[in-house]
Image (tube, rainbow, N blue to C red; front, side, top):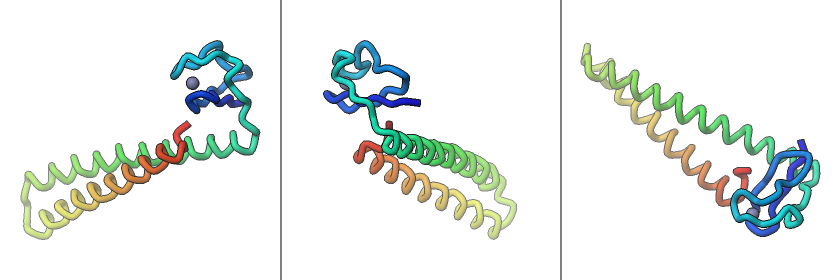
Length: 111
Ligand SMILES: [Zn+2]
């Protein structure tokens, strides 16, 4: 699908034509430039990767919930240690993912 970038604010629109007005800054359609196919493909890849990051964040949240159930049961020390490690590792991965996503947004890789 064609993509158009607002020359005023950088918003990316997907469609055969630019929007009548930019939904972000209200600039008129003629302020939009068509994004070349190669760059457009990169934007699609960045979106896919961002989606993977968001899915991982949600799965890691599930890991923390399951580990919390195990921690509450306290069957034996090795189990408790493992559930603590799962919680800690999930938390660390979530922090790393959030930092990576913040980097993407800073570089305009969130189209
Ligand atoms: Zn705009």
